Image (cartoon, rainbow, N blue to C red):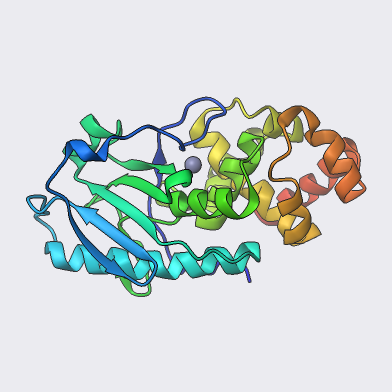
Length: 263
Ligand SMILES: [Zn+2]
């Protein structure tokens, strides 16, 4: 089942080249006054002093727990893998996030610890999930689940591509809206996607769109089998797994883009 998130939120991610928004070392113990609340497979840690002028703390935490449990199941359905661990979410205010996790408007995943860290933006988005405002999105949770179910990704294309495909949005817009917005001149070639050196605002929608194409055309199992392949081996792996050389795959992707983004 492909994710059908009704609407979604912003994911601004800090990104090290080719390293993705994962594995940042955060010492959450330096905050010793965390409170926690669990629902289903998600446990949210938050600072009891932290509050928002826009919604009550209870409303925000309850909403995040409901939305994240929904994503938790959707991600598994989409990648056809089971994941049974509880995921911890450390929530930071915009101000705290800036100093403690390096971003006031996004997050980091630490898949080995089934954890991610997120600076919550209260005002940026009116996007809704299950009729509720989505403060966090699915991107970091997708990193945690894909790393643990599929292995350590060998490329930025599959690491960020899966997270963006599964989240289906980037910075308040759907992936396809970004692609239409950027236009054909900003659609990355297969080679550029594999190299993975483009700036985030271009790379994230492009990588998510390519994975979406790959899954729709070749199925999730073939896409999953490429998740851990290193950049340098991807072209050969595409040929072996999909039966298409780089030129053939590029032509197919071009057609997909023309079909979906031609306005
Ligand atoms: Zn990411």
